[in-house]
Picture 1 (cartoon, rainbow, N blue to C red):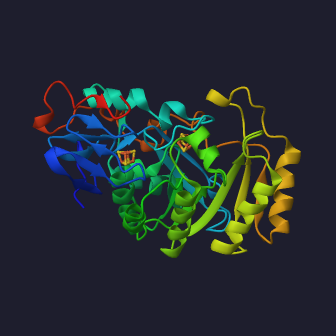
Picture 2 (tube, rainbow, N blue to C red; picture 1 turned 90 degrees about the vertical axis):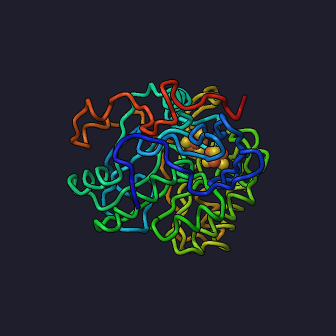
Length: 350
Ligand code: SF4
Ligand code: SF4
C-alpha cells in the first residue's frame, strides 16, 4: 500500500475501462458509466482522461468517539469504544437523511473538484495513530456510505488491523459483490440498514435500490466472514406496518440466523420528511413483538435516537492532534495534470 502523503486523486479500485475513454465504477450498485469530465452519482469519483479517480481519499467530514453499542452493534466486543469517521458522498438520497451536508456532501465535493476545498485531509496512518492515542479499540466508517470511499476505508483498515484495532462499516448495503469481496479481509463488522422490504419504499425514499439487492449484499457479507448486525429505522406512514416488521425479522432469522441482532430505531423528522412525526414508542415496541413472534432472539429497541448523526460531533482537529493549518490547507490535487483549474466539474446527475 502506497498511501499518498498529500492530497491527490487516487485511482478508483474497482473500475472498468470501456470504449472511448468511458469508465464504469463497480464500487456500488449504481455501476455508474462515467465519461471524461464526469463524476459519478455520489460525486466522489471523477473520470480524467479515461481513468477513474476518487476525489475524497483522506478527506474527513466528521470524527467522534463513542461506544460500539451506539453504532448500533451489540454482539461484537461489547463495552469497547470506537473512533467513528466519515467523508462526503453517498449512493442514496434518502428523504429523511439527517446528515445531508456530509452524506451527500455536494458542495464539499464541488469544492474539491475545483481545487478550493479546506476540508480536513488525514493520511490513513495519522488516523490510526489518533485512534491508538485516544485509547479506542476500533475504527468505524460511518455517517455517509463508506462504499463510495472504499480506497481510503481499505487502506486505513489494513493499518488499523496491524495496530490491533478492529474495523466496523456502517452501510446501506447498496454495494457490489466485488466491493464486498475486496473489503471482507479488512472489515470485521458490518452494521447494515434494512430500510424496508418494499421496492416502492426504496424508490420513493432512497433512490435506485431494490430490496433483493440490499438483502443479497447483507447475506454475502456474512458469508464472507464479517460479523453482521442489521437495523431498521421505522418511519411513520412509510415502513410502519407490523406485518412488514414480521417479514424483516423472518428474513433475518432465515438468512442470518435466529441469534442475529436486529436493531429497531426511531425516526426523527428531517429534510423531505420534515412533516412526518417522530416514531411513537408503541410502534417501536410493536415491531419488537413481531420480531420475537418470528423467533428472533436478540432484538433491540432505541427510543431515544433516530440516526447515526454527525451533526453534534467535535471538530475533526480535536482528535487528530495535527496542525490545523496543514489539516485545512487548500486541497488541490498534487498531480500536475489537474492544473490550476482543479479537477473537472460535470456531474452525472446533470
Ligand atoms: S455512485 Fe459513486 S461509488 Fe457508486 S458506482 Fe457511481 S461513482 Fe461508483
Ligand atoms: S440516510 Fe444514510 S444512506 Fe440515506 S442518504 Fe443519508 S447517509 Fe446516505
